[in-house]
View 1 (tube, rainbow, N blue to C red):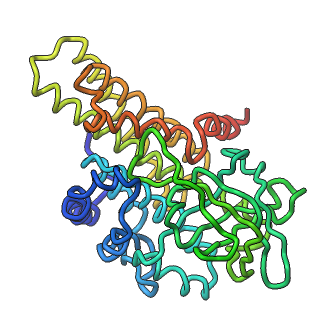
View 2: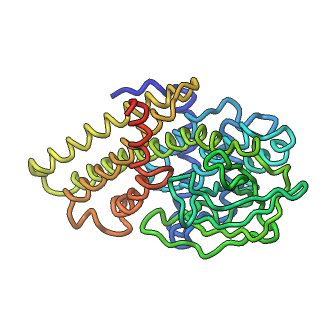
View 3: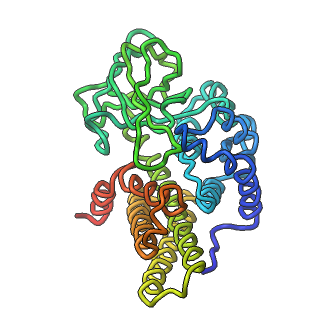
Amino acid sequence: MRRTVLDERHEAYRKHVRAFLQDEVVPEYAEWERTGAPPRDFWPRAGAAGILGIGVPVEYGGNPGTTFLHSAVFAEEAQTLGLAIAGVRVQVDICLPYFLELGTAEQKQRWLPRIASGDALTAIALSEPAAGSDLKALATSARLDGDHYIVNGAKTFISNGMKADLLIVAVKTDRVAGRDGISLLVVSDGMPGFSRGKKLDKMGLHAQDLAELFFDDVRVPVTNRLGEQNKGFTYLTANLAQERLSIGVNSQAAAVAALAAALELVGQGPRPGQHVKFELAACATDVAAGQALVDQALAAHEVGELSPSDAAMVKLFCTELQGRVVDRCVQVLGTRGIAKHSRLGRAYADARVARIFGGSSEIMKVIVSQSLGL
């Protein structure tokens, strides 16, 4: 079906992104998977290509005339090439909005040029050993001491966490206020008391690092607080809509790529039987429905009308769709679909976590049901 949410500007950007990925990532992607993260020099290369400055004002080194739609194009092209580069989405789609929307003039001048150029890698630290999707259960604390906060606690399963230079850390600045006691602090690499644990192994997304973080009396300047004290839950709720849309876009693109890979493999063998045809036809129908939902959400987001519940619907539907399509494609291909380093084998392993990070499918159902007045 013809898409209308993207125009010639986005298609021109698509060609630029495709060339960048083919030249700069595809030749070394196997090494990324082996080492568990992109090399440090990838980030300045991506910055120079205008990929990290999407939506950033020109005065801070951004890519002029770009919006989240350009980020969606990047995700689509990466998945088309079988590249799971989640760290870029963490930097651009998830972390960057906090600096753009909450940063003071001084903070923007201090941080945005480094983020857009790739000089600074970012991460957001929410999940804790005993607090995942439930932000109210955060235990990492920050006590005000003059012009600094004293931060203590631990975070886990943090994407980009092993190498991040700037980490947006959700902390409790009022331990008894529940979600109304959360603040956002930017912890810089090298601050005394901040340390990282082991890099966490996982079943998929092997080119994306995942870290444990520890805070032992880390002194964070008040000037590193994003927004107002104790308003963090409101900020997180607002920005989680784009994060969930980003995950949905990526999952939809992954489903499209998985179906294309399956069709290519089927075409290389004997004429498929009726069952295989039916299964792939069902996948194609699922993918078309997912694309319509994603494009409608992208259009709404472009004009500032995407609600948190609509974003939750997109994440819920598209991540479940990704798992369903990849599983069906692997099933009909049998042994040809399960090779560890094949396109479908990697897609199968990469798909599972999408239904967990950014808020589990169960949390998405809670949000949607609340929007229905239930």
